[in-house]
Image 1 (cartoon, one colour):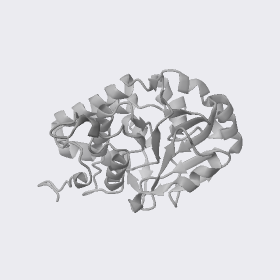
Image 2 (cartoon, one colour):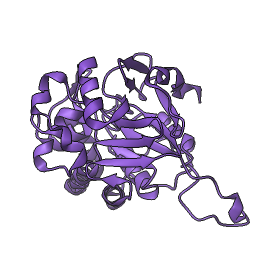
Image 3 (cartoon, one colour):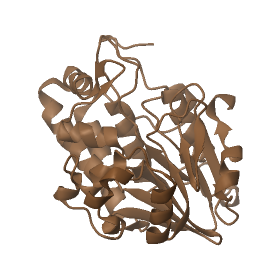
Image 4 (cartoon, one colour):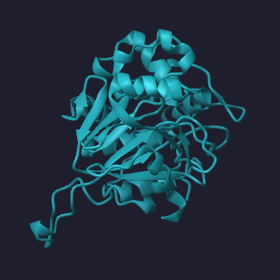
Length: 322
């Protein structure tokens, strides 16, 4: 049920996460800042990326675009819906839930669920930041082009909608005179996001990222960006290496083979591209996932026994089947 201002809740019935007051500027700013600190201080963070090693389980996802049902299902799949707090009551310590899976999240904002022409997807950003703060070593919120464009004020038109402007209107409608502080916290959180998650596995390394740079712009791209800290120049539109990486389309076999050799990975798990059936394979070793639409999927991986690139597509699981 919507509140008095017509803003519906963010699907809280599907998850047991502690409540977050998404209409309080103080609560939203606090969640975003806790998430930013966790992004930067987690022990898995190495320079511009997160890095984990086997054993363990990974739930890899694609673009989410403010799909609250799929977001809640991913949280439950990762075992994070009832965790994050000390065991209390009569439950014996040995009955504590197992460690959660690793979970990637990216392209969280700018969905198609507008209300009176406004986008309220700041809420999923705050929820994701809160999740990261409570599971800093297991939640990996990767930089996407929509988040980067939002803080840069760069225009994106999606299905005829100017998504940066509608997002700003949603924030300003809810928070009024407090909206500048919320926008600043969103900026801090986005700039804290890693460019990728590197999974070190027995078969070889897996790289999860929103995208990889297009072949036509590789001369502007610094492949060493994954092994150093990001600078303001890396975020510059059409010039910076972070911008080029999250906006990449049109990568081909030759480029993927080049990056495989440069970065020492054997499998790329990406988003950004439209996959009508939820997933597609780009030879020789990239899988593109979508997690936002009705055929959205996730890819579960046992990091000790990861699939070969050509096997990964057959392992995706539809989110609608949950």
